[in-house]
Picture (spheres, one colour):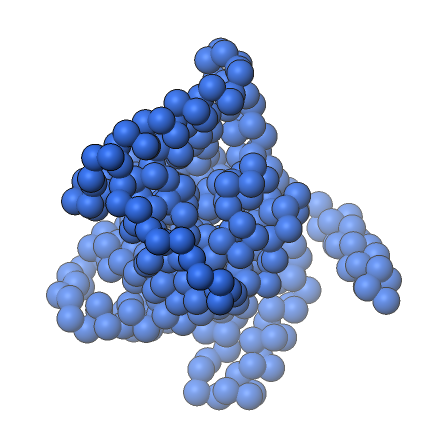
Length: 383
């Protein structure tokens, strides 16, 4: 039955692509433009950097230092701190890439991988500050509010998931971090990797390019699917049906919501068009960015397909984060003083968004790593 439904859906998709070739071309071009402007500069440098750092043994060094912090807070090994920092820095799907990598190499257990996957996938800071707050809303001051709502919601999910599938086995007592043990662990990891630096660099660039191109394909493909759903008025039908069940919300709001459930960026654009009140816009934007969209879900499913990680735990975490982020956004909006003036995105301003994406991602990476290292230094004991 499942195969029949799959064949029918693919046949319907192929029919739609033949019926609306120009719409397919425009929607795919829109998805690739978004990838080029925001995703590529935010992901590719950090993909390459993460590969080099993992090959150098830095993750093992960090694992020893941060074990006593990550284990009691998130029930994760210290190596997971690197995934947390990179996931918050670069956005989707960096957390899934690194989590799958650690699981394939046996550095984390299945349950630890599912806990880590649950709270290391976010929109990039460049997307929230540049594309949404400055570009779509015209209110740069809201970038910090949206980012804090999404990131804090993710940290709450990480803490909640520390109780996910925890065994009743007595765990080993935590050791204080030691620079000596961390250095030895890093050297051992380097000795196990027999590749030269040239090979490591070449492999890092090759794997990172393949991954970021895969992300581009997913974005273009789901942009086409969503455009066809809109042309066939399927999303409008779902919005109308939902309005008949929950009449307090208008059809345009449900229309934006269903668009965002499929593709986050288009949903954010529709949310701003559908709602006029600032607090409503912020609420729906936080909800959609916490959710991520089925396009991101497909990326994560593809990246973990070579592991034994369960996808269902990731979906549950995204749903929880969406509602927590929405609630936090309203709390922050209530206590914050946000300027009411708007700054519409101009053509000249859009040209610098690539730089802003890289700049903000770099600042978040430095901030995350600096915070983690300060926490580690406060607990270090030489041994």
